[in-house]
Image (cartoon, rainbow, N blue to C red; front, side, top):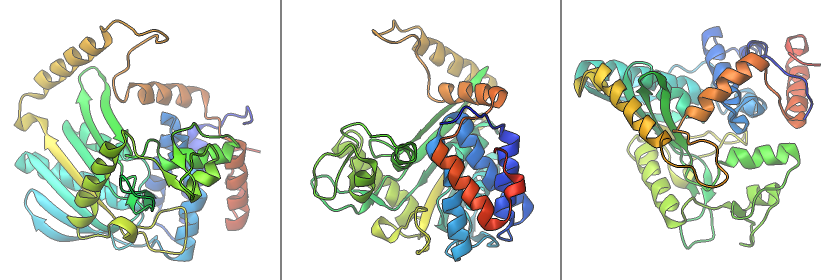
Length: 351
């Protein structure tokens, strides 16, 4: 990794320009770019600009539609269904988040199902839309197969991430964003980008043997978190994201790592209006009390501080906005190659 720091505005401008070459409208290109850069700012490089060439390949191949307009196909008060019509997952998820918040403000709860969408990056980007609107937000999605059913040896279950977010009084929002594999698949791709091995216990190879080689893990099976529990949670998220929404599920979902198949990904976004339960001031004070209780716990050996979910990302965001981002060499090279391919080398924010 080089020591050349890249400031987020420059990186966002390049990603926006890249998306715009596909014909995507400027505001949508800016949204899709922001989700990538924001992931890097949070410290989640596995979901950051490393993915821009993958998304661009899908757009240029026509399996993801840069001009698609998600369509409201069910409008039932607190409940809605959106057909993404093969739009970028970020576009469909942002629309679903806003729809859920708007419905929650009218009904106390809003639930929006999304079908025929695509991979949307970090789920917390969208649940935070709800948290900033004084709602509790939930978002699930399904993904291409990454793990086997517990006891099996063929991958047919996605890592199917999910996220919760809520305002936390004077603190940055409390946010959970996890996949149900022991590690997000993007972290294995990131290890490959960096030329690193992966820890034992993350994956098995195609023959079912443990591996520390990221390529063998990609070709093999990523293991679920908490053994059978992670597998079961992932199936439940596929029920919510795929079966309930009317989208694809199981092996019918295809990931962003290829540009041959339409995705078929589905999502479910729920927003709960906190004011329908109690005054928002009371909720904020109670969240502060809960966080204080977590941080007051005596520390285990080797730990300097207790963090609540989302706190590390909030700190990383402040630091990386101030100091700039450091990206892996392979990511920089992939972005250079993309810039040459689309004629946007003058927009590159690094040498």
